[in-house]
Image (tube, rainbow over all chains, first blue to last red):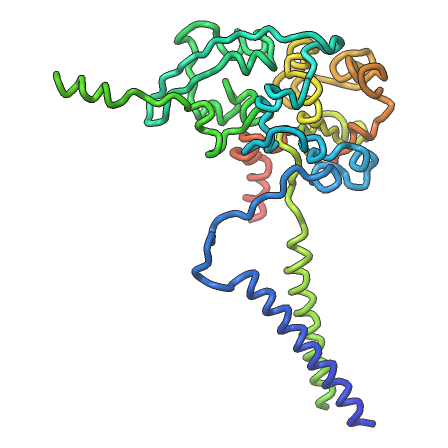
Length: 206
Length: 147
């Protein structure tokens, strides 16, 4: 009887050890496998466009979370983007994937487009900024920006990346709702290469 | 006697197993917030008045309306919680109530569709650069006190 008891315990013990080694091996593979692994400091890719039940801000047990539309479903036909909602809103609008109203009541109201590019020369090594009024007037009214955020006069607006990142100037929208400021989106604005070589030649002649 | 030792060891291994399992699967599944870029959490008055915070999905509305409709025509400010909206204004047809009146969009009787946030969320724009760069002062002071 005693030996049976002991055998039973031994059996349980060995099962426990097996399970422990299995879990430990799992732990090792996930934590401290190879000191020279690839992408040691690279963050894992975030899950994109999660449904309200799993997004972390909706109460998963609430009525809203189950009834509200998952963003993935809405974005399925739209042009993909690199940051933010991972949707290219401007292209999606241009290609007619979405047709947002310009007037609350009139579905046929058309925007007044102003096609004027503003080039802003940039101090550092980054390409100059081209600001296209066209894409902005598709969505916005003049009064949204002028004169409160941008004084409509050449040279009257001082803009810096710091102020943008802190939510001023372009940062009133970009970094909140319009495409965010990430390494993948720098070149969307900084898009006009500087004429550096010409300047060098001139200074050399002098 | 040996059986007794085994029992103790098993207890130890069992708890170890439990901890390991928790670390591997439990903690791994506690997901950070993955809400949509531009989602607004509005909790200026909601919780103080006994309702869950409001979640406003910018993306959903952007598909249907251009920015200008709300931010120029309806007077929404470019600041989360900055328009001073309350239910009375909405019922009177201002702000959200300009559309959420049962004619252009579902009416305000669907409380839970807006008031759908988790308890305790503060007013902010989810995924905003400002949010990522700046740590709220209150939290910092709490940490210092704790230390």
